Length: 177
Image (tube, rainbow, N blue to C red; front, side, top):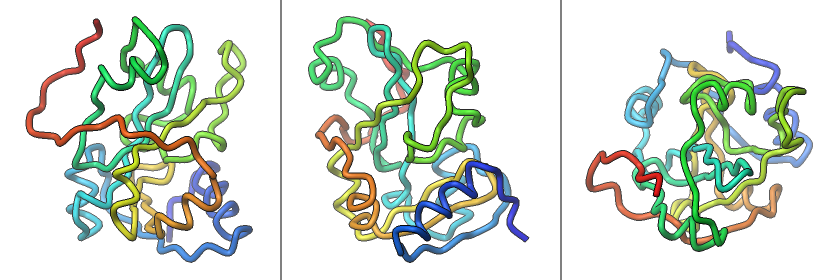
């Protein structure tokens, strides 16, 4: 039995309404991209990780392949911003309703809490995500993943796509300057 959250149900409804083929997999909790890839039995390359950033005074959900990392200099340049940082765990939960590692790549389905100034979360997707035929992601839960074609994802969301990542050679923290 799939541990469906309301958000997981919204994702399934969106995919079903758009006649998108997908596979749902229930697994042990996977808080990291490495854990998710292992539990899904898939390459980390097809993992779609969602990272929430605060750019100036606005939150942006970045979607990128799990084997890459955000290049903060490029992201700053794209948004003509001086200040950029990752959201705190508290901000992440307030804005997405998800715990770390469970945020799906569907900003339009996330509902910020009433005390947030931002009524919806903008999304930007790295072009490298579409280098693979499939993508897999935690669907609002650390124990439920969905696998689908990247072409279907692009078709139903018509997202803003840019190049803002680099190869993940090191595990260095993001520089906030």
